[in-house]
Image 1 (cartoon, rainbow, N blue to C red):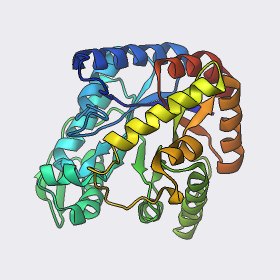
Image 2: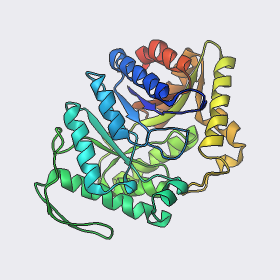
Image 3: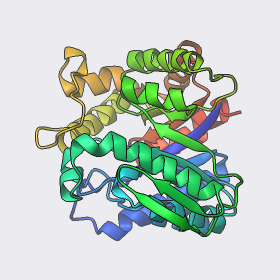
Length: 329
């Protein structure tokens, strides 16, 4: 199994200088490079202290400069917020500067406040996302780009640089809703699976993706499908559960709480949102117990790539020292 880290840049305590949040993350990325992780996947968010990283491409350059072998993933580039040509340039430049180590993950986004601030109608988000991805891939694959779309039109534009990886970096689409999964499968894209689905939903969505791929005439064989999981590990089950609960409270309050509005309504399976995260989403416990939970997902959901989001420094340290050597290929 491959293991990567989904790196957030949470700023829970604003008395802490923000530069130290970035410094700690970059220090962690250096450890990942030495410890044998497959990739760091950098999370892009806007206008929220949940994760203060508005440019995963700029942060990716910083990560690449501090590493030798670690792949640099965008988890994700929020495609509707970019001019497609600028997005193609930035990701290609990151691929060149990293020596061909980019994993490109693209997503639509879900937070209505972001679309409002950027002046984009929420109902246009899916169509803009699809068109932007199409343009980026064509810009990388063609010497000159001509394109006539609903939102963007270009005539004979040479987009430079081209990615170092040819014809382009490996590509994943973030897909959490069933329509998004079905669209990605219809185009033959591999998907990134989100950290907010319950384990049951994760299994259901993975099977639905496989069936949708087959229905569209694409093969599921050999695909790498990173499954993102929030992880709390500590010396005892009680300590780990406490970490999971604190993280769930922070997540609900700052990311999906009453002041935030998602593109899709979430039901939390009828549970209290915090209990939903603690009981059904977060992998938590001792290192041994988390290894068992990962094995269960490998068996039940076909997990071959764990995209871990450690919820504390202790969780990351134990993930690196106690879990990674036992589950990584």
